[in-house]
Image (tube, rainbow, N blue to C red):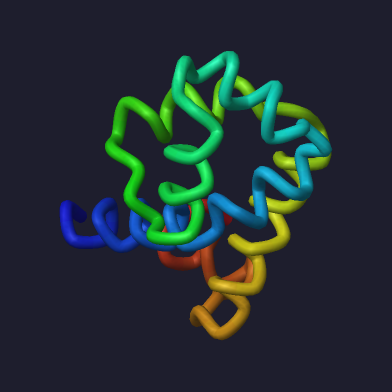
Amino acid sequence: MQLQTVLDYKRLLNHISDLIEVSGCRNDYITKKLGIKPQNFSVKKQRVSWNPDEVEKLLTIIDNEDVENYLMLEQMRFLKNEETITLDELKKSIKWE
């Protein structure tokens, strides 16, 4: 469980630049809200050097439906090869018939 949390966080970090682009928010707006210089923002985007507090604040700033849709699509792509079971199999496994 903990390992999966770390892997999910790494995946999120690797998509931060995409999320910023999808959000439609301008970089100058984001830097102002984050309280950092545009140069530092650019470096953080290129190096993916965000700390957890910055990621939390950034996601709060860029939160919109387009970002949510992008995240959902990426999650679906990530899980597309996961094994699944049918509803009937689920019912049998929990003895719910």
